[in-house]
Image: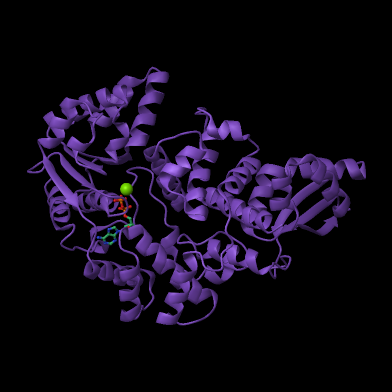
Length: 466
Ligand code: ADP
Ligand code: MG
């Protein structure tokens, strides 16, 4: 019965969908006109349930000539078809990814990776529980920003208003912003605190305008005690957003409220920032964060190890700290990978394992995929066209695949931001960077996106083999 249903479904679904979600399913039981379909992991079960249940039900009903029900469950015992070496490498990569991976045979072994990796932000103030001062390692690179952030949390709107924190990607700006919120709330729970990305701010504003509720929008923002806006560089160039932000800024400032802003560069280096905003920002404290030195990197790794409840030998800490220089997010990623491998293979964390883990990730033994293969796989997976992804379209169902492509092109082909922009219809590198960061952020809390990216990766490496 299931074979018959599968061959029907193969005709009606896209190849990518069929291969990813249905190929490895089995029928487990068929009783009282209810079919129980098993899939290899909980993520696949969720996908089947949400996206394909109706089609599966219809197909089965058609074959049997009567109405049947379907339900889905996880196949136990990891009855996944045997994989070739390369595909396993791709799968391990996915599982060893810093975020842990949903479901999947090998993922059960990684389930031991502590839960911190899965924490999500709380909706009301948008604060992520992981990002607190206690977990922020202070070094000469971030001392000023850290001290200013502490002062602001303890005495909002006293000395440093606005506080403008700037520095490169992955150096701890977002972490500090959240930490301010947590600490201020812990001291004064009645404070109204809001953390938003400048993107969220912009989207809310656009929606408010569309629904003719700008008054609500203003009131919501103007009653906040501490407003934190992350990555302000993204509102530069958007005139109406800047305008509204300027008014919000003034209203808050004049009523003695604290504003904290982060950016990847100082105000004077954002050419499209309106002059009056720039001078407002410069009127407060500008605090930069530099890349951490070797010692600080090792200290951060030690802290991450503690946080994850694993003991990492000093030589490994130093090795990783030497190897990954620029970005703390990558530093964490490297450590997560070592920990995941150690759990996956039941091996202690040692220099040997660390070298293996980090050497592997820079390509040795990994199948090289081309830029075209990545784009094609993404396009097929989302059932859109190449023209959609390279064109100007801003619809959500196009923007997401485009950003997924940016992320995967970066991860899987190692192309530069400029190259990625070129192959996606001549977008500039900051758009690409923004897309990649957005995916990274979203993957932290969005299991579905994580699953989609994992599925595309698998498809990519499966098709690269054949
Ligand atoms: P940014 O917003 O500057 O791009 P994030 O705040 O997102 O960077 O930091 C990236 C990752 O590095 C986060 O997981 C954060 O917890 C961690 N991190 C950054 N700086 C530090 C630090 N000084 N101590 C501990 N962890 C840090
Ligand atoms: Mg950030």
